[in-house]
Length: 254
Image 1 (spheres, rainbow, N blue to C red):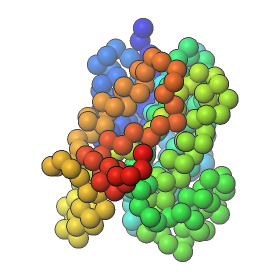
Image 2 (tube, helix red, strand yellow; image 1 turned 180 degrees about the vertical axis):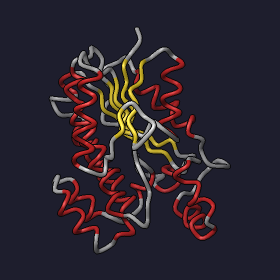
Image 3 (spheres, rainbow, N blue to C red; image 1 turned 45 degrees about the vertical axis):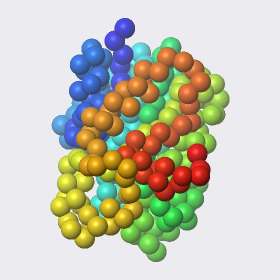
Image 4 (cartoon, rainbow, N blue to C red; image 1 turned 135 degrees about the vertical axis):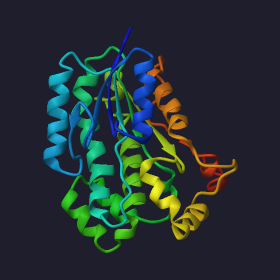
């Protein structure tokens, strides 16, 4: 049976790779992105998040079989927007579309997290994000804007772990899991990887056991698996698809 899956960040990178795999399998994809998508919405804003949810309900009134909260940015020059999209946009997507997932006989949701969540920075920002107070989180971020990306991904990972076991998720048969990529060659990372200084920082913070960075389709492969998981026991997991970064950084923690 063909499924209906909504994918945010569908116009490029990992989201586009997920879209192509789903469509190749005969599934219907509702893409959401800032442009070039069925739903064009800016997830950095409350209005954009509301529009995404409203349009999703209109386009899939019978429900969604899957949601991929993949949209994310890394903009050192715009830390507030980075936090807004990566955490508050992702959470609004998942919470807003949960009622549609509940209509499916096998609802599945996947969030794109990151190995950046392992960095020992941004704890205060992440903790404030988890209160749900976006203005307060942005105020805390103003003291250390450079932690916007890792803090946003740390907050998302913590939210996912805490939320997946709730009755309205697991109890309703909706499996919520996350994928934590390492460095992936996408349009978002191209500029960073081209900067020698930033490349050195990436090499230091993302040790790998295999050569080269990931391609978007390698991350999409795992997301597709989680969307199609038939059992009911896999939830609240964040699977690191990172070339060994997690194992190298935390060999004694699992």
